[in-house]
Amino acid sequence: MKLNFLGLPDHPQAKVALVPIPFESTTTWLKGTKEAPLEILKVSPNLEFFDEETALSAHQVIGFYTYPLEEYPLDVKLALEKIKSQTREVLKKDFFPIFIGGEHTITIGILSALKEKWAPLKVLHLDAHADFRKTYLESAINHATVMRYVYQEGIDFLSVGVRALSEEEYLEIQERGLSVIFAYELKKSFESFLKKIEDFLENGNIYLTLDMDVLDPGIAPGVGTPEPGGLSWYELMEILKRVAKARVVGMDLVETRPLPGNPFTEFLAAKIILKFTSYLAQAQYVSKT
Ligand SMILES: [Mn+2]
Image (cartoon, rainbow, N blue to C red; front, side, top):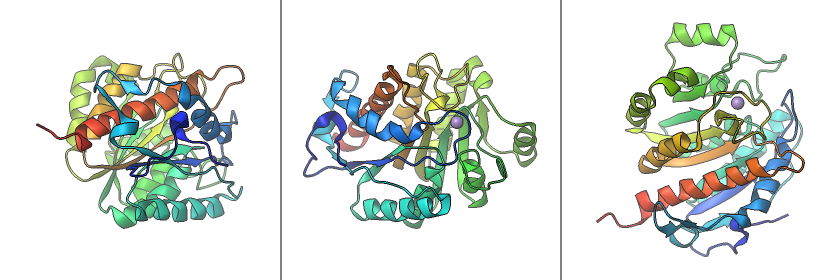
């Protein structure tokens, strides 16, 4: 099934590809992230395509191509293999890929292909959770172990907005000196932590993984694990603006969970994609004079 971002036909010279990955098999509490890619694409035509902040329309400046929705095996390893080969195909076409999940586990499949093309890779991780468990409910590969994979692969990362983790995760982060900016810290001194994020983005190939639960559930209630005290819209925008200026090679937006009768979080997710690509268009494709 094919449904296009913003409801527009694929741009013949598209530089950005939207890749829906409706995979869900290991989420533990509230299910439904599988429905998110379809619902996000469905609400996207309701966005205002013009962006007043950058004074441009991303669909005209960089253009979008949307991949069709596919089915995934329930077996995590098989699903990740499929995501890896899909990612390879997207990269061959030189698109800037934006993957729309699905549960956070998809990032493992994406990164396994991305690191072949863009080594050394660095991951900026926006999430309410550390996702640094060794195993979760007896499985070593699932949505709570994504950053463990990143760490084990030797990929440099910075986690931002964390406000729910186990004591084991906390102690290991301290012991190993891992880069985690907790939400309570960020809220105390946003400007100084923004500088830290800027420093992280300064060199290397950057991949952004954005778990929707990093946002405050007041504005993003449709997630699997809503945690209070999250980022505001404008805090997220300040971060995205800086990512767009870095050598960014792709992003994903995961863990949206459509709520019956309330498409607000899907709309927010679509708007994040459009804002980010507007920033990207301005920073990388509009001549800098
Ligand atoms: Mn999360």
